[in-house]
Length: 464
Image (cartoon, rainbow, N blue to C red; front, side):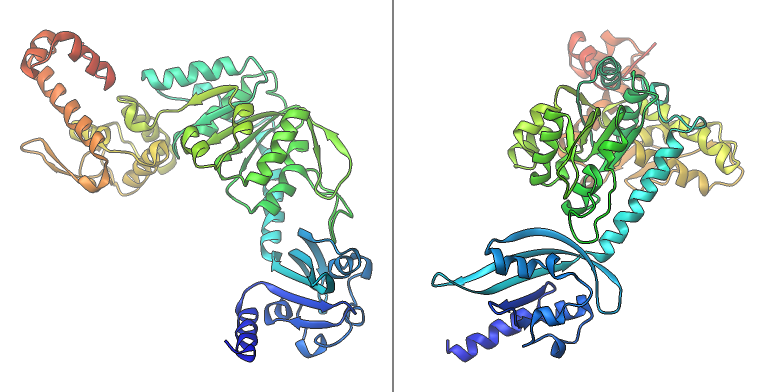
């Protein structure tokens, strides 16, 4: 490739990328200043190119310029957050990586790559304000949050999770909770907090997947004035949760570099604000949740092993709704009571076929999906007092009332669940034919009594 063609290709690449590119030579003159950087700083390229960078600087102090620092110190500055005013006086927030350019052991200039984070920073500020408002409301005398009485269920699996959770209330040990989306991980977390000795102190929750690493770090650990351009003194969530509990939701989505900083906080009991030099002691109990199997995320490298062992002092696994048997109907009826009041309805019960449809649905969204289904179904009802199969807003099943049969959409469920679904149905039919005599039902199914009893326990099938 000829040199002029090569240069033209490089220039096209530089001008087409979203990141701002600014290169100054060793004399401080701007050689490269792409369209994205001009748009970011609201500058005209002709006012910057081939001119002294110092002469162009107006609103930003020279001592804070990372380009000039790198040119002077010959050391790179990575992932630096800057807040400054552009020529129109508008505050912008960027994340910059600035590196010295050395050719044949000679410094020829400095290159800065900038990503505009202004909108994300504004969103972060709003989130912090909402978080503070939410926490203030949560800890007001009128509102205490969830407790164990709010957890509904009689299945062995949910009882086991509750039993471990109640034991967790008696210590300050870190807790790791695994459960699919919608199973109630925050409900369990709040119940642990409000039944512990920290119940009168703050409970603060943060979703680790909601924000990029650069903003999440400041939200968790706070920022220090002077740490970077435009930074202000702001306590992070760990400081706000001092003496209380912090819930780190979806810990598997936290970037690995930030996981290392979290580990240090857990081990040493203090935080250092972003850009700060002071160690601030904090007494915070940490509860972390994951919606992916912990072993899987360890093997995939999504979670540091040292952090996993530090978090997994008490381990709680919340079962998916499809494995909780009759709890589905208990929860459905609870939601009916809730939305009777909210919607002004008078639904008294669910029809038999409707109950079977609810019990046989896969519930990929778990309890949250069930509640939304009940809410959606009741919203479309008029003066009926029974929630029938025709009113339930689930499309997975087609019901033949005459034959009392279900046609399963095989694309909606994995094979093992479909097999279990059919097995549970046949056991119920055998018990119906045997008038609930387990020995006779076992003979109909070709099983021994002990095997049938085991399967009845597995599917939470109880007969009088």
